[in-house]
Length: 349
Image (tube, rainbow, N blue to C red; front, side, top):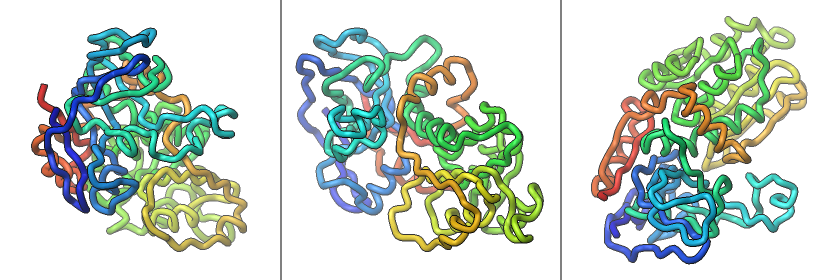
């Protein structure tokens, strides 16, 4: 089969590799689409958790071509997969906190195991509704490729636990940030601020439900939030209730600590990829609640339900589609924040 393998920084080569074979209990998908994630971009550019020869890609939709001995999965089903596969043996998994499985990355699809930038992808030890999800009518192949990133966004919003009257601020208007805006709106949050330098992505944020758009390259972010909330404690900063950082840069985490009210909540939902400097006294002085958000716990069914209900319009999040042989062009398009949202890669069938 044809597959795109990471070889070195900014180098992905499409070549022939052996077809995966489904053993008893495995599911084999013929890939319809695979989205390029922000973590894929970190791997592509900086070598994030990747070794030469790895097939990247974990935002997968595909048709089942084999599922020997797997209950609830039939050949021909359209399905998506949970790429972060918990071991179910470590202390975190045994507590039910599968999103922080302690087994490492080697058993995850698109990181240790070969991923979806290929004609076929194997899901080992498959369990319907756990690491492989057959999709109902009303969710097409393009939408199915968005289930995984939407689950990431939904998990972050659930950790933030906003109230309808809150002022919520989202830093970063990539797919995760846009999904976060959408799920905040669906949660009834009435004031949602998107901080994003790309005019294209700010416009997309408005479609998803952002009520205020801030360009951090042109606007004073603190002043923009202060105009909504009033000044913060002792006249400094602002009074945002919730900040979800989907940008992962120095300015986003620094700004978040400054604009939150006392006892406000900061959720970090981005891969930073390098050290940043912060003012911990903001956290101490305001008794901020700071939480990480890693992947998803049990959000896949609800992300699928949002697509079925029409609460999320998948086409409003997709900007490009490339064939597998043009995957280098697909990565370049993804890196262009002024033109791209979600970029899908489509293998030949």
